[in-house]
Image 1 (tube, rainbow, N blue to C red):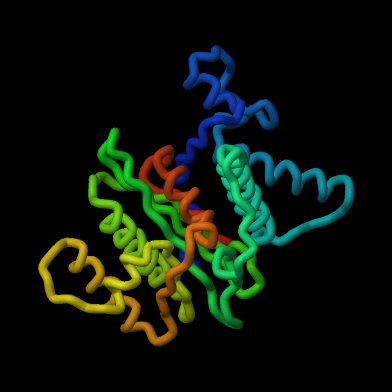
Image 2 (cartoon, helix red, strand yellow):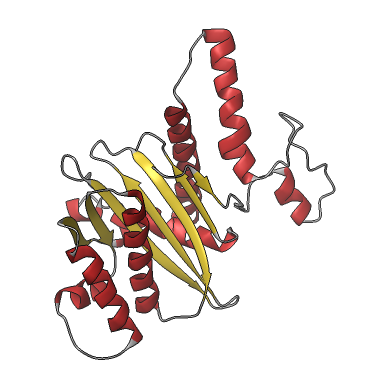
Length: 252
């Protein structure tokens, strides 16, 4: 992989972290309670300080040393597990248990990675949020990305832009075999049934088709929302990101 982290400003409201508390008018010091050396924000808690502090304790007390890529993987899992738990908590009153296979995420074929992506439109700020994550054939999360851009497209245009951003992102890191999953049937149907109109939506679809068809082992699949839930959560949380945040496991 080319990089492990980029543009690492991440703000996830709801946690009693000092940066979050100060933004709500609570007068507390900004320095991290644990290390005292950096501002205690979400990125520092999830990825920097807490992960390294845990590894320090494991090395000191249990003589256990883990490779850097495993530390990054565990940080990614903590972050995405927390986001999923927060989202599930808001839905628990109306949640329905789904046992149908197509409503659940399934791991990709051997030697493939699966890319889930989604978009969210924020009309109040005139911005779009994109969420993308990659998991391998062992269901291990190997990368995730939050991205926020200016714009106010329609929902179908936003979801098509999310796919385009995901394909471009995956190309950048050189994954040769990828299954892309989106929860918009409109996007997938438009991808399959080519029309020659000149709308912005069709233009983005044509770009996506070109990117996928020029790579032998790329494919696009429609799934139901529950199978793409993490992508949806990341897209919604992108509203709290400045620019983009990319987390990668360095062994890929």
